[in-house]
Image 1 (cartoon, rainbow, N blue to C red):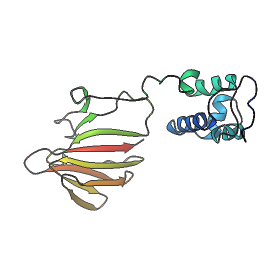
Image 2 (tube, helix red, strand yellow):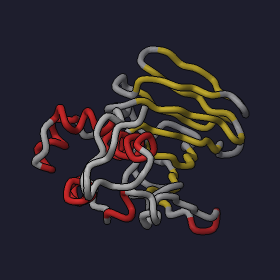
Image 3 (tube, rainbow, N blue to C red):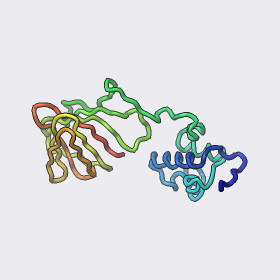
Image 4 (cartoon, rainbow, N blue to C red):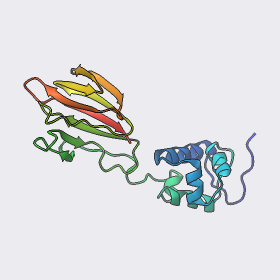
Length: 194
């Protein structure tokens, strides 16, 4: 049986608002402790809100919205925030490295205008030859899906050949690098978690 809402409480189904708050917190990489610090609310209360056990008042919703850099209407789902969806047309993909750069890679951003991301997708065109002995390592995970051509992926001490339709998914903290094989530059969809 549903519990009565207090006066001034947000009139929204608990599950929808609760799920939205939990999603926004995780999307921004915040712990409940961190959200409690930015809102001035207790961790236990925020946990109840995310589980749908408590419904925030308008003033509490305003604190939560402010912590997420949203309006209350955006928090409640009345309207989308400006970059809730990112559409990038092929002709509009910005390059952030061009072939001929020191590394030899060419990258195009696929979601550069999206503010809060859990992953960074881009198109990669690795050089035909390794430019030097440099290898890359970073936090998170990486996925490489070959769209055209063939790619040699060196990961740790292993070397793997990836062909069209092949996919590599790996922990990115180990040194890795890639190069195109064959007469033409290969193209791959790369997704890196942030």
